[in-house]
Image 1 (tube, rainbow, N blue to C red):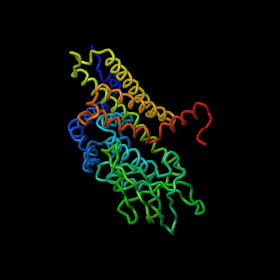
Image 2: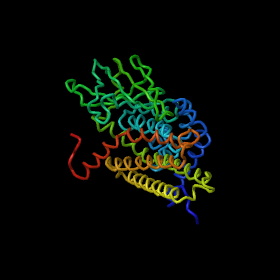
Image 3: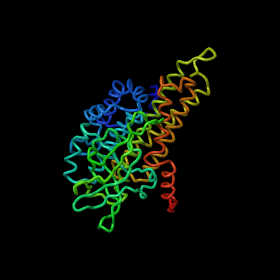
Image 4: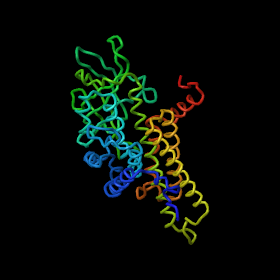
Length: 392
């Protein structure tokens, strides 16, 4: 039996029937509704807000969470969905993972029962859109330096600060915002707040002129003396460990998602090589082209195996932050190399939007940086294996 060129080792044979159904339904939706439109979204620099409801109808939003309208699927089921979405575009997967693994997970894990009931059902359905405010202009890899402050004023909280590079920000109805609190007021460091974006003092400025992740709405979130009631505070999350736990959820989706981007680039190159003729024959018959294609096929397989392993660890409750760092570092690197190599096979055609490859290349350049830069993941792994921290 000839192997599937996109799955040489038959890794998808490991999927459960439910996980195969997720794969097939998301892939079918992507082929019918997303792929025909994504080039225009890339050119226009946004994804229409209406697609949140489509994602909700498919059960993709917060799909790995339980209750409150969430599907409660397995970790691997969620990963497979991320893979199929990112095979179309990293920006589309970013929308879904920001909604589910950042905004919704924060409320689900650290929120009150009232907050969960108030927000999770509408976020799961796509009626509402959420975003996650942690990163600032001068506090990216070092979020402990954040300048956003939350001060108690009677029973209320007053927030001031600016958050940057906020995925879904321009579309969001609610933001989960992390801020420093004043220990002199009896508080305990960084805390999270549920902030409806229609409150006085909340402004979202869309970040334009992006060259990457263009099919994703990105904003600057400005908080100018935003007054919140006491019950806006996420009661269960204390310190930076709370938002970092959310980032680990999102990174898991990236580990799977970039496998989809890599696979899409490899398949585009394989198809093109079979059709393109030079010197009287298909370039798929040239040894150097076959070497590139073989290397890509092996790299996609290795990335798929790594994603599957981390999925099994997550389901067993054994997925640690350093393991997620290893997965994110390795798979994004592999996907970016595959995308760049695929572009060389397509030659000049590879720089046009007639093919998805260079769009994936520029997207993956951002994925390499967000949710922890390449350097930060290397240092996290270095600390784990040496026992010595190089951060400070």
